[in-house]
Length: 165
Picture 1 (cartoon, rainbow, N blue to C red):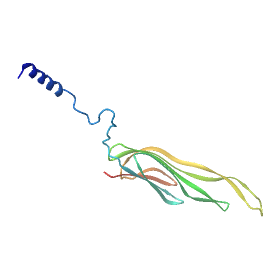
Picture 2: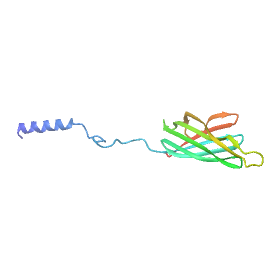
Picture 3: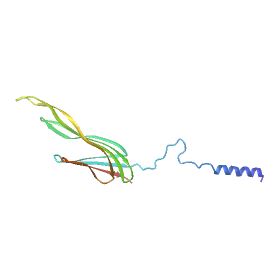
Picture 4: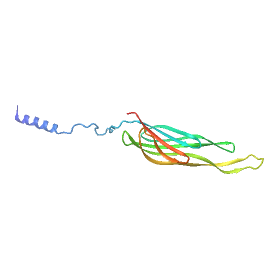
């Protein structure tokens, strides 16, 4: 074999063996995410000395969820005035066992601002709604309930479950 040809083949082999191996994500392709997507069940329960036990539950992926729902009514001068419950949450997984939960749990409370009518006349009232609630950030252990608020009116607990493995 010609020594010049042999030198060219050896040089070519040396150059190609030092080239970078192909990457898993060639330029222009989207990066691959190795984290498995899962759903989370967020259950908030509250015990109220006047109204007993209530709860609400939502299922969401990692990120934000918002829920506004009717919670009942209050009678004001023979009229039913609706009350609402609002839940806003953001879940971020820290490990497969724990997550960070930013939570707002609130409700509206109607109250009379003025009343009209006198003896023998039909009485009517104007009312407004006051929004009250709790907003905070918690570290939760998936599958274990956490009491997040307690006072003379009752307590509020939250349970976050990580669905799937």
